[in-house]
Image 1 (cartoon, rainbow, N blue to C red):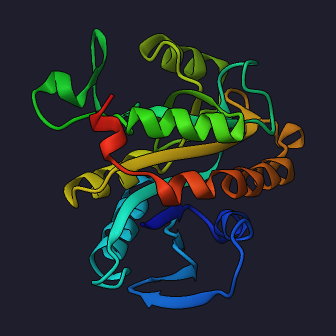
Image 2 (image 1 turned 180 degrees about the horizontal axis):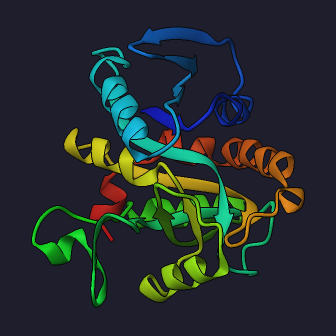
Length: 237
């Protein structure tokens, strides 16, 4: 099965690609370039849900050979954690990909887009695949929030957790990738390596290098699971 992995920036793309052996092929797409190794195509699609959705859609439409279409899309990269259960350098596999700030502010607080009567604000990755990747990598499984603005205060972090109890992390691309994958009827997964705590921005405390190394390690361990996964596993429970 061919797998499309979408990151935000090239340094994340390269961290993922390093996990896979064999020669690398470059495939040009509108506004981007696929790095292909074996069954994996890795793309730096840009920061934020809109760029991620557009890049994923282009890749799904024209990136894979007709004889070997994509069977899975993975949103991957580094992100911030809400909880000490997932410390810096650890891994998270999303069991829910949530658009945390898609909706409307009202006098009574934030309303998600679903409460407004249109759209959706959550995608659920295949549960059996989430369990298998978490087992292979030692990752924690839980909701990952997609935001368009990175959280920079304790107040905002608290508000997000109040609205989404149990959320493990925030990042900026997962929901966009999931939206494009869903429209192409391809399952989606999100994998994040923790680089910082969600809240007041303290760049000196971030561990980006450790998170990128963890991302490489994760995909090295998860590659056989991703490549061999069959959607019937989830249909069977």
